[in-house]
Image 1 (cartoon, rainbow, N blue to C red):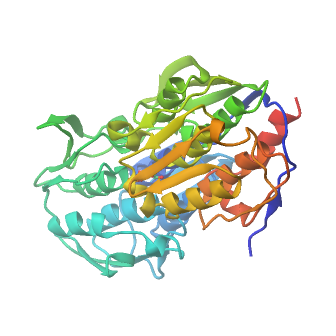
Image 2: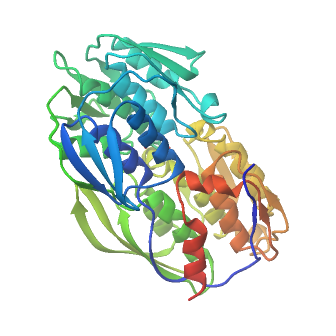
Image 3: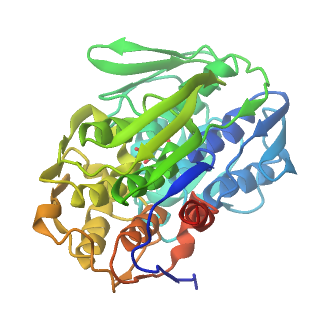
Length: 438
Ligand code: S3P
């Protein structure tokens, strides 16, 4: 049984500065890609959240030596070799763990089973099974869903055009391709999804190339030995997004978020907030371990307006859509979100869960097949009523969206199973306590 929390009703301004948690996508990759090198790697600012710890435990089961030097720094003794596991490799709630490791392990000479929790076991895996099988992988599944049983196979490189812009699909194929010497693997995607794998592979010396081909975004890779190097994980803009939105809709707020990853394939939230008239500023931008990083200042923004969000920007803000939906309820006019049908395949069906939960607060939100139509604050009373119970559906981002809705509500609201927040944002409540006590 997971614990619930109750918000206090409207709480006023968020002030001060804070670090945001390390990036979840980059933390997974630091271990997975790092394990393909040979040598000692120090990974600093690693996200010790439930999802990333699932990846860490699996790599340990596969024989990787990993130990923490302090709270968020770990040492990985990488061997580029894995031992056959004696138990199922349990991915918990984490799609990134399952899909990326399926790519890595398809090219290995061992048999293993990747399993997941009730939410992950409902999510589509055909999107990786089909192209990996075309490469020669032998993967059995439960009708396209977990558990995935992977058996020994010899893989060949292929050129694969993905129907969706998915970093997990792209990364699964690149991780398989990174282990194949005799032929190259190319992944083409219609829009550019997050490119952390490509950047990190390059950082470790891979020959991966990224380019445009026939209107698609292409990445090509073949085996090159990777060189071990210490790596620092950037702060997670997807976690920062909850604070950014809260600061922009809570009167008199002014916060600075330090050390946030500003990879162009992740900053869709900043572009949308700027288009909506949010007072948001980027400071101290620099490059670290082949990833852009910097600080974000956000102030209360009284003149937010509705916008249309669609097309190429969707993969660059896919995880932020629940909190953008909440933001849109506080803007003047209508916000339309299109081309985001893959929201149905996240930790919950986010089209359904966002609609259901925001409606409880009085939001005027209509679900569509690939997004939402949200009427802004002229259609409601400004502040939400609260006095409701939020459900999380095993989905951390719904838990956090519910909490921010609670922060701007007149009356307290209860968020059931709030501990799901641990999936990506340990210390979430502490950050908000610090910013509200200034
Ligand atoms: C992720 C990619 C995205 C994102 C997920 C993390 C990754 O999923 O939604 O939270 O780390 O590669 P898709 O690849 O399914 O779009």
